[in-house]
Structure formats: structure tokens, C-alpha cells
Length: 406
Figure 1 (cartoon, one colour):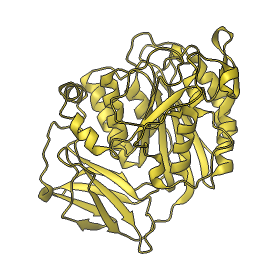
Figure 2 (cartoon, rainbow, N blue to C red; figure 1 turned 180 degrees about the vertical axis):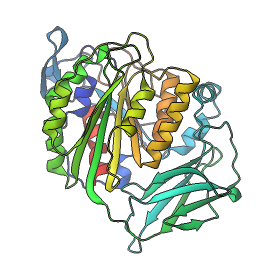
Figure 3 (cartoon, one colour; figure 1 turned 180 degrees about the horizontal axis):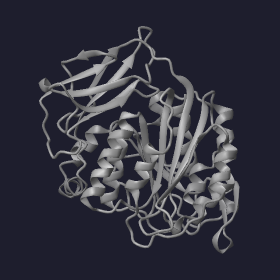
């Protein structure tokens, strides 16, 4: 992840303010606003006095990092499907799809509620084609799940008659697919028996630990405990945290991790031992990070939500075996009900943006991107999205955690 004139993106993203509201937001609150909002009072150059942010300590070249400086946007492609479906017709974006062999085009969107009209979360759902499993997912804390057909196949068309859903042992036909020709998401609604889930959320941070990540890891060391205590004060859900740090082949290590724990002191102690070194070329061992996130972290299958924030600015190496590993891992994240939320920084190019948005859609997550509205640092590419709400990155990530924890 690149730095913006020495300002830590992770610091700005993960330092949450005590004034945030509790878990009272509705499901749709985490979707992006349709109208862009200007960020008032942000000058062209960084000044902690002007921004009035909370000090995070000194970093490189003595710069004092402050929270609430870096701005970001969120774009949920499922919620804005008409925009995405039109984007698929763009020649460049079609090229990105072929390059990475990810084709998020056809899916069945499910909404599960009980007889009292309450969302049913934690329910396994399978999409089958002619009796063979195609995609698996778990309904989230709002009762929704996205099940993809032909995610890794270059096919624009599906025959709904070939497909069925299996939910809690019952089979359902007559599915409505959302396709590139569908202006809005078709919601397949079912009434099912409620599931018993724990009032808890697992949150993992998958972080690039190559040489440019020194400040980000430094802020994790300083701020994680306070951040999670703040979230705990505002939500009834118990929060477990785990981490994955990754570099690249040939570095001191490729991945390392800290297991999920209810004790923030354990996570903080582990992060305190980490530093940032290695890297060199642009691509990193993203596929190994994804593998470690599902093979080594012990996700709780009984909690209401599982979320993985993936902080990066570089794609995986483009090799057939690595792309296949990414495909397999993403399907497993969806099967385990783990939402991937990429947070892209200044090194992102359009092809990587496409890949990260595919990760998010496949797992029913959302895409977060740093913007230029703060006037801080170098130029960021403009995300290829519609109108969106500009937010402080710290507030945006806090909002997502709280939304998924409610």
C-alpha cells in the first residue's frame, strides 16, 4: 500500500471516532449514496491544525499523522448492477475480465426471512446446475446471499431451467437470474425457519507487509486496541480479531498470521512484533494471503458476520496457477460466508480495480477506494463508478464494521 505524503492510509481508515452512532443503521446504509457529496473545509495541503484530526504520532520525516484526513468512497456493484452490467460491454473492461478470468455476470440473489419477516442469517444456500453444485454461500446478517454461475467461465448466458437452489434441505426451481441484460437485481425471496447465531462478528485484516507498509503497521500497533474497544462500546456484538500479513516469494516470509481472539491485547501484541520489509516488484503474494486467510484463521461458523478487510495496492502475479488459486480461494470465502472488502490505495491500476471489485461481488462484499478529495498526496486514479458519497476513510470503515455487526 502506498503512502500519501507520509500519511498512513490504514491509520486514517481504522482510527474511529467516539462520536459514531451505535448499531442503529439499517441494511441499506452501507450502500453508497446516489448523490455525490462535497467534503467541505479541506484545503489543498495537509495541516493537522486545519483538519483538527486526532494525533496518531510522528511517522516518516517527523510528519504528525492525524485521523480524519484521507477521503474515500464506497461502491457496491450489486447494489448498482445496471452500472456494472453496462461496464461489462466496455472493451477495456472485457479485457480485464479475460486477463484475470473472473466473470461476475450471472448470479442468483437470495433474501431469506422467517415467518415474522425477520432476516435469517447463517443459512447455507447452494446453487446447482443439473443437480451439480455450482456455488455455495451463507446468508449474511441481513438475510442476503449472492450465488454465482460461471464466475470463472467466459459465458454471458445462462439457462435458468438448468438451475435450482437448495436451502436447508429444500429445493427451489423457477429462479430469477440477474444477468448483464438485467437493469436491476432480481431478488428471490424465501421464508425459512430461523437459524440460531451468536451475537458476534469475526473481523480479519489482511495487510501487505512489504517495505512501503511501515506506517500502516505502526498505526496498527498503536491504535488497534482502542479501535476495537470503541466498536465494542457501540455494538452489542462480540468482536473477534485476527490478522494476516503477507509479502512475496523470496522475502523473509510469504505469510504469517495471528489467530482470532476475543482478547484485543493478544492481537495488539502480535502486531507489535511486525515490521515492513521486502517486496521489490509490483505484484505481491496476494494468492498466498487469501489462502492463509481461510486455511489458517479459524473462522467461527456460528457468528452473524465474517468480514475480511484486504488492504493493498498491487495485484497477484499473473500466472495460471496463481489465478487458479485466487479463483479457488474466492469461492471458498463465499462458501464460508466471509465478505471480502478490498481497500485500494494509490498504486491501483484499472485491471487491479476490476479484480478487487470481482472479489467483493463474489463474496457479497463491497469495494472501498481512496479518493483525491482531501487534497493530500499524489494522484489516485478515479474509480470507474457512478456518483458516490465522499467520506473520511476512518468513518467509512467504521460504518461497515458496525453495519455488519448489527
